[in-house]
Image 1 (cartoon, rainbow, N blue to C red):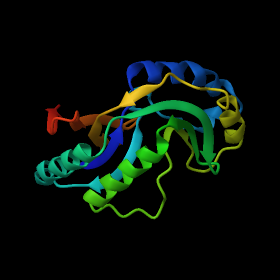
Image 2: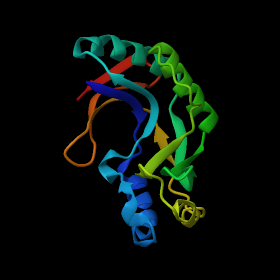
Image 3: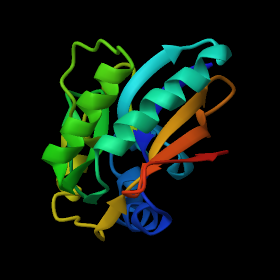
Length: 186
């Protein structure tokens, strides 16, 4: 299974961002981008890659330990930016230092090595060859500031690619509510 660990914004935050970003698809260059489906919008904490199914219980236990050590966070989707001319993203505001610590703890617990520092963002669109106009699209989102929400769940997600946009499913989610480990299998 191709897996990653994420924080998933609630429906209201997704709806606000979808409304704020809908006009971007009409801008010059937008037709050359592969737009992410709103159903799959998430904040990746760690990408695990291909993992044997029998390792999922161990990963879940490690994530539960991390969740027990990190309280829920107050976040909001806000602003926009690019990674060069290949990725258009929406930013994150709020307890981002704590989100960085959470991402670091997840990566450490799951032995994930990544040469890129964690940068909280939600990917809106990608371009394989690079696309002009992405920075202008990011500028459209400069003033966007979504509703604040509580990020209290860490999701172990499965990614399936091929035959259209990537499809993401929840394998498991874990939360710390101050009473020890709670798990909700999906």
